[in-house]
Every structure is written in structure tokens, then in C-alpha cells.
Amino acid sequence: MAERTRRDREACEARLITFLERSWSNYDPSTYISGWHLSAIAEHLEAVAFGQIRKLLINIPPRFCKTLLTSVAWPAWIWAQEPDHEYPLIGPQTKFLCLSYGDQLAIDTATTMRRLILSDWYQRRWGQRVQLAPDTMGKAKFDTLAGGSRISSSLGGATLGRGGDIKILDDCHKIDEVESEITRESVLRTYDEALKTRIVDPKTSAEVIIMQRLHTNDLSGHVLDQGGFVHLCLPAEFDDSRRCVTVLGWADPREEDGDLLWPERFGRAELEPYKKNPYSWAGQFQQMPVPRGGGILKAEWWGNWESEKHWPVFDYILASADTAYTKNTSNDPSAMTIWGVYTDENERRRVMLVDAWRKWLPLHGNAPDRLPHETEKDYRMRSEDSWGLVEWIAYSCKQFKVDRLLIENKASGISVGQELERLFGREPWGVDLIDPKSQDKEARVHSIVPTFVDGIVVAPLSRDWAQMVVAECSEFPRGKHDDLVDCVTMSLKYLRDIGLVQLGWEIQAERTDALKYKSRSQTKPLYVA
Image: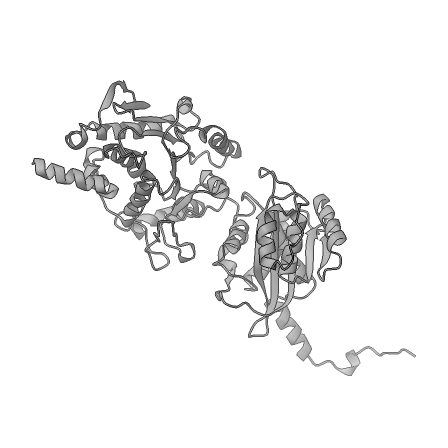
């Protein structure tokens, strides 16, 4: 018996997924159902414990065992490890700060972990190493005699005066409140202003956020915009265009679009009822939230230019910029898109998105002079961090040999246009200030829908910047940003207005009209006597 217990203890210490499987019956009465996604999460949590990952974001559907693995089994597994000076987050001395959207949810999870720690199974294997301090056996907080602790609270709760070696944020948004901008922004503000300082050692402390996507500007969207997180994204049904690959060399193992994440528990029949709510399905299950009221421009309407080695020969290149010169990221950013018009093998004109960016920039930067014999690439790498909005727009126009640049005729756009004319007036690209005929953005977006439906618009969808544009368009009008949407509508409407791009029915109508017989009696005389 002692030998079997020793082997079991060593196997559990070696792998978190083994610990989860063998500890399961001590805190959950249901039958344990394995799944490859549990191994993937466990692998990334192990990397956090051993210092390979400092910040980890996991997006996964509800009821896929995220809380029991991340907030119950993982902390208990870390405490069960023998301390090692090389890995300061390993051992019973580790302090955890565990947060959820509500106090009761946080306390329920803490109670489950405490039940595991006090179980005969756990104590027989690690009782000498992990003992809870008898004077700290509360629901919201309990400590180990080795100096470790688990503090549990709602986000912004009273216990935020304490810190942790590892912060675990498990579902920090309540589903029925996330649509409220005030409530949602309160969560983000608490995260930015209060939570970031709640750490023990800034050199070693780690953070894990695990949640389902509920809104484009939920906590996941917020930290992804800030950067610095390893993102483990696990949609219920596989989407090859969004295959998740992480720094550990891990990649989503599914091969076919639609392959399920956990078919052993959630098969197609079990998932079907959730698909009846497209909004809930997109966010909570597919981890690609589309806000309510969004989706005027469907993501699937974008054609994909698959060749990475060559692009078509463009007849005309158009750029559009939405300007809001500011470095304050709490304000609207500036954005720019560049489009190429080409003729396909069927002699049909199409439009391809060839570049896009979104930046928070001042009007002018401090671009340094070019050094003697310095290449264009070297100059850009040395100077681009100091560029302002005018410099970035000018560089983009030059790089892509733009024929025409469109800027919306508004206060900031007028100033940008004037500065571009003053500094770059001799460049081959001209500047047009565009007055939208409709001040209603939604109406302008609806006006370009036929261009997409007709299959005219394509983009290299494997590129990150293309995905950024497609995502913002599909989220409009309830997404976080609409600056790229403004650029898209301005560009496509301009190309339609000047007749450079035509819909299929317009081309057919012209051809039909050209074939019609016109009698001489229908022809007006050139001169009247």
C-alpha cells in the first residue's frame, strides 16, 4: 500500500493532468471524462508554475472543466510540490490571489479546493508538506504552515489589499451584466488601477486569466490589446483560419473545420441547443464575440487571397485614412487601409486589401535625417518609433505606390491633409478630402454590402492586419473601434462612385444595352435646321 501511494504521489507531482484525474473524486461526484484540451491547459499551467510563461490567457467554452482544473487542482498541485529555489512559484509557500465576478463564486471555488487539501487522499500523499494553519480556516482565506495562502474574492473586493505570487482571474464578468458598458468598464478599470500592483515579487509573479468570451471589449479583449499574454484559445468547433499556436510549440491538433473540442462530453447533439443563440455561440463557445446588433459585414463575405508569394498586378492603388491624432490610448486611434484594384482572369475588376494599421499617434513626430548610404529598411527600423501620424501616412503611401489618398473632411482630417500637402505635395499621390453624403455610419456601411456580397473584395486573410480589419468590420456597429470600418466604407464607396469597380448586374446591364439595336429614327440628329 505504501509503495503504491508513493508511486501515485510521484506520478501526480510529475504531471498536473495526472493529478487532476486521480484527485477528481475527492471534490466532484461526477465521473471524470478525459479530453485533450485538459492536457493542453495543464501543460500551459505547468509552464506558468515553472516560470516559462508569466502571463497566460485561456479562452474556453463554459462547462469545459476550466475552474476545477485552473482554480482548484492547479493551486493544490503547486502546493504539493517540493520547494525548489530555482522555481520560486513551486511549493506550499506559494501565495494565490483568486478572483471571480462575485464573492459567492470565489468562495465556492475556494471551499472546493480546501475540501481537496483536507481529503484523506491528499493528506496521505502530501500531509507532511501541506498543512493548513488552524487559525486561518475561513472560506475567503486560508494559509499553509509553510507560508502559502489562498485569498478569494470578487474583482474589486475587500481582500484586494493583499497580493499573490500567482493571480488567477476566473470569469471576472457576469454574463447578464457584461452588456452594460458601465459595469464592463468598471471591471477593466479595477484590473488596470488596482489589480496590477497586487503581486508579491514583480520579477517572478505570474497571472492567469481563464474565461469565456462575452464581448469584444471584455477583459480578454482588453489584455489582448495591451499585449504580453500567451493566448490559449480553444473554440468548441475548430476553425482552421484561427488555429491556436503558442510559444510552447503547442498547436491545436484538430484538422478539419468543425472538429469538436470535447466530443466525449459535448458532442454535436449536446452543442446544438447553444447554436440557437448566434451571439452566445460566437462568443461563449467559439471565442470570437460579435456584439448584439453587429454583423452588417459578415466575415465570410471576404474573399481570401491565398498566395503568399505573389500578389496581382494592380491597375490602381487607393489609400484611406481615418485621423485622430493623439497618443492617448483611451481615445480613438488613427487608422489606415490600402487597396489595390486588379483585373482577374475573367476580366472582372476586384479590390484587394493590401495593408492596414491602427495606431495612436501625435500629428507630427521627430523623424531623424537619413544617414549616408542607409537603406530604406534600415532607416525605417531606426526611425519609425519617432514618427507621427503624418509621417506614417506618407511612408505607407510611398511604400505601396499609392495613386490617391482619401481623408475624411473633418477637423483633424483637414489638418492632416494640409500638412501632407505642405510636406509631400510633390509626391505622385494626391490627397482628397471626402465629405460623407450620409452622416449615419451604419447607412454608409449598408451601402457597401453589395460590393462584398458580389464577391469583389478580397484580402490575404492569413495576415494579422487583415484579420484585424475583418474582425472590426464584422463587429460593427457595436465593436470597440470603428476607425478601420470608416476607412473600408470610404474606400469602397469611392471606387464605386468613380466607376472603377462595378457590380455584376451593372456590367451585365451595360453589355445588354450595348447589344441592343438602335434604329436611325431613335438617333438624334447632330444638327437641327
